Image (cartoon, rainbow, N blue to C red):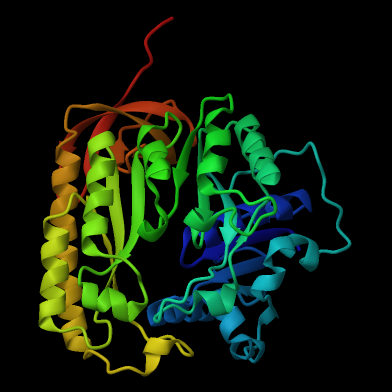
Length: 418
């Protein structure tokens, strides 16, 4: 076996796990294939948050088995955890890996191979990803994640800081900290710690790098943490909130102890202290017994909010969750409501990007091709630029020139001579 590839589905936590695997496989002599369907070994890191996530993973596995029949396919992740027998019965699937065994996947697949040091490693992504927290101890009525990933578990702070130092020494200019419930970081550690404490340590580290955070739960954002997020010199001004809904009746049914006024207060604070920040959110439509009035409350809340985008998910009953047996909303209604909110998100995102026209922003080159490059700004704007000398992963200054509802175009501003 000479090469491998990885296909991710779902959250940033899966991406962080795959980032670590890619280094482990290369240290054991395998070559990374950028095409996720190629390779002698194909790792599929699945998601089961929604029915669509299940379908996408199954479709990809069938495609690999059809187009790359010699590959050894390994299925890991939350769908594999929830329903391992489904994949055990598919000819061509070599192994099914539960979540409990994901941490040491390269070692488990190649126990006889010794990990080499001092070799060139091809980065799996232009930005480093680090999973500092996994699992969730919550009890949202719609969510399957606590069943497939277990209770909240944090990476010890010393180990987290050590890995961040290693990424910085490898030249990464942006490090993405991920977690299933990132805001609960450290609460399970002895001695007890917190996300604020971890970020405070990161703030004091030397090195020219930025930190981007994955989804944040508004129920776990006390004022000291909010203040740090909004004023830090190292944290990207981009905050993605797991809001879920704009109707307090539905929030209560979801098991979310949040109020709309609390949401508004958090967003107003972040925008007030960090005016250039991008605010995003996860929103579920079609939750059981969601009425037209509930939907209008969500629509009005989102339309009047400072959010610059939102990810809209149609509710998908997950086996074994409390809400899976409740009265469903019909598919046509869910589809219409989701389409409505996505149109609002597109309009708000276009307006947000246009507000930075002619401005110069910090960014990272995340992808290059024969025609140009893609720069991701610190405040989460994808900017298409012409061919440039900067390599993938390099920090740049980018000036936004043109904004349409589909894309943002700009140019990299060369550094001033010393």
